[in-house]
Length: 327
Image (cartoon, rainbow, N blue to C red; front, side, top):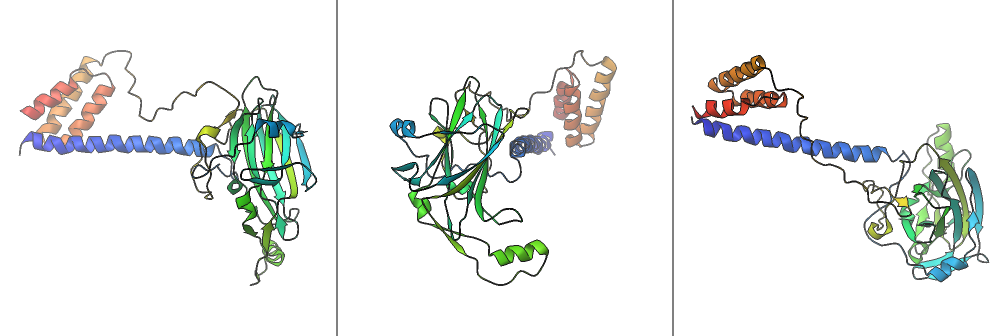
């Protein structure tokens, strides 16, 4: 059999191995990015609708409530309070100002169900100049079952890193016409209690909560001085929304302007060159082993020897391999 016929599939094997290594590296990079998203924190979605456009005049008219971490602020969004009825936004809104010089911020937004009604939050994050920087749609705030010290609620956690040089950033919480047209299925309190004490869960219907333009929020803000690399969200120009919570974690966002990030390598780096050439004895050993492997018809072994020899600095292993195959 012609050596070239043997060599061709061998090179195909090597090519497949390289492709597998690239895929594995990409998977590892993806997992490392996912690992940056703590458990229980949903990733902002990127599929259908862009964030709403709100006029600068409307934003400037709002009274922004300061939230200095660590703080937990309960807010009632009433019909007599701040309202925005512009575009898709409809109903009461919550406007908050957060310091931008405390490091990364962990902000938990909770909308507490009252009876069989609940306010569905969306969050628009603005930088110091009140320019949109990140967008968290209502799908980011899923329903949470009641617990021992908590009630039915919609809840999500934002993690933001304000860019340096800013004094504060802004959070606008609002609801939309689409949100008001839908409902949320809650868990029957009897089921929650049975599950909590380990009893059999009764077969009874769950209540349905109607979405309303007013409601009660709880905003918890915590500064993470030592976690400046924890960032969640996307630059507004590239972000859309979806109802799916299984979409992979998006590109991290920094609130405010910053230099463009350095692209991440998606290909394996070339092996580092050895400080010194391979010793002549080692060169001879690898050349001899390559010749023996080719002579025995074990081209795969010869290729592995070639790869190892060149990694160690061999300058003659490739020529030895080619000459052996030709003969």
